[in-house]
Image 1 (cartoon, rainbow, N blue to C red):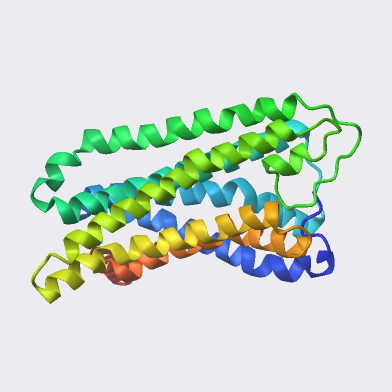
Image 2 (cartoon, rainbow, N blue to C red):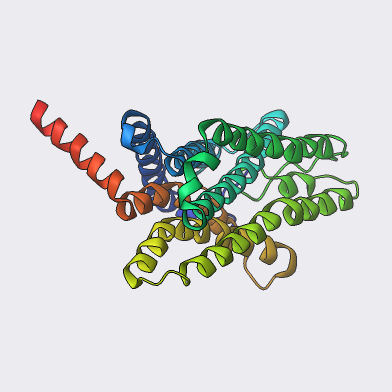
Length: 302
């Protein structure tokens, strides 16, 4: 892997914000997990889904960023084919799982606003666990065939990936065989997993808006919408660069420079994991209060 083609001289400078964001992402999401599991008032469905998102963000950034930094700092772009395929699998696996988690969070908001009296009866701990297992299981069965799709190809000596990490089409393009099956499968997966998740999220929020605008009190309407604000920000942050990269990669041709594609792809695996805990920390009063308590306790001990 060569990192960001055309920007090799700037690798050191690019690595500074990426490394900083990676450290913030790990620290922020670990802190979020700690707060949720140690504070009983946060043992609610919304926060259990948030802990799943934090865990997925830690894995998403860790699967790619350390190797990316090794390329930027030490020109250590070499990687075995098996390791490259492993990175590819876990990258796509985590992405699809995180998409399912965001859908589950949208369903959580739908139940909380449309059926508030039945909220705890519908989203019981066992249901939440089953939804988490379903997200992981669906992602595994969708992404596992990618391993066979790249291993079935014949490779004729080309071994340079113009990227900072291994992804499905980047590996497939090294082959001398036809990669139509890989392309078709990639599009089908995008349509019936990620795109389907987005459609269902939009439907959930359409139903939420219908329910909110039937509430007579203006303050109650604003409060209901406020509980969705953090989730909407996270959804936009997650899907916008992903869809831009997907469509630009397939339909943008050469109108968008390759280094722009790769730079955005690099930022994509560190920016959402960095910003997500900050968004929820700023927007969620219970998390703010718990952070202040932890910081106050730390000062007391000093």
